[in-house]
Image (tube, rainbow, N blue to C red):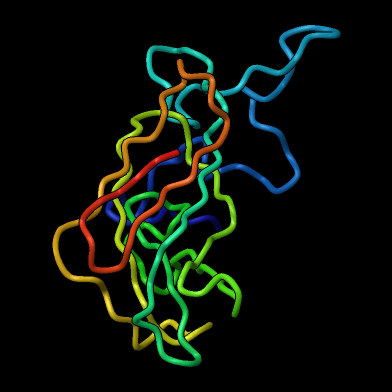
Length: 168
């Protein structure tokens, strides 16, 4: 016997909620023999049915001498690439004895779309989610190169406690 759940407990199905592992989405399948698959415009944030451009690779360089032994500098911001404002998911930066006090992150890909990139610098215990200190003041804003610039990568530089943000 099959019983129907009350309508208040039913959830609408969407393309993303009913995708099975290993199966391609319809918009990832080729349109015909020998054709390249089309990508969903909405999946990458493009508007108006345009194909989404590849993202920009961004690296961060932070000058910070306010760390204690065992601490690390992190970048956290609006983009999921830098934790979506969750300090536990922030992008770690590294330094060495010869490069200190400059801390550098790995490259992360920022999706195409608006190039106003908000972030903050956080200092805290290396490899731990708790005990991080957020820098004071408002959010930092980096104006990243737009798609028309043709740039494939950029470095965002700043100093802990300073207000300037440089993009190269």
